[in-house]
Length: 392
Picture: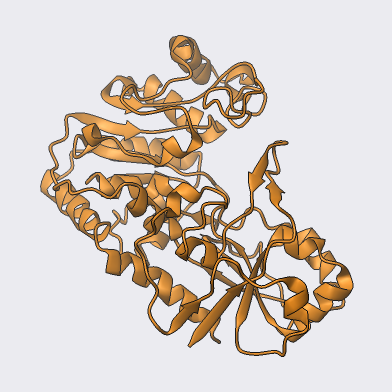
């Protein structure tokens, strides 16, 4: 039996590291499996259909207060807490907590990128925790390693993407265009990919998006004026000296911000949705994942949406990301481009999608993943196996 209880947050809000925008507290396992509406990106686990097996016991949303927990006798329960609350504890209380109780510090929505390791290590200086776990949704080789804690990571966005886009759509694969290329924030790598497609005269064979504004704005609720997607943060298209990128920008700047006409573009949550018009209508979906750090395999909704659409996909991310994804049971191409990181991977992926593929094989792979993304038992089992690692 694994028991997990929630420590009530010490701070009511967190801070996104790159803005001054207040956000709700990050959700832990208790919040997600109880569909807590007052946590970060709660639309992903609203009316969550997944129920954990009887040998994994998740506590109630109200949780336990820190003071109450500190006077409680130690037991086999793991107590989970967000990093901000953990680091804001008085050091005396923090020391008592981690040496007396088993603790989980989680980042299930941002893949572990919100861990501040300098801060964590400073707070744990000269303290050896009883059993402390960093539980997150991305795999990191080396960056998060420390003898004071263990790591567990699981692809929660497979469950989240299923939950947001549940439908009774039947599989079909009848591609009419080369590729679907959804992009939101104009990260440098995504701009380079779109610019290469433009340079090779392939962008006209794709449906694509790119949200970009030349003025930061202050309306945090406005999708287009969000501080996350403006030229102040992402200035590459305006600052670059590379001619092929200048050509792309000059050709399409009047279309930016470019979004899919049939999709809502008001809230951040809209980016999690798929359009019924996309089902089976592209030879490939190019997934432009968030991070390119070597060994950082953080699979977001971007990776799982093409599976729900019945589309073969290639992932534009760090080296061996598709090989890593296949460990969970999903089918990928095992192609040579997967050995490459950004830069070399850009042209290799474009070359790959242009090849004369056996369409029956593409359809078979797409159908296989489509079925997996409709199988609640399969999706939950991936997570259950990871939670089971909590018990050493």
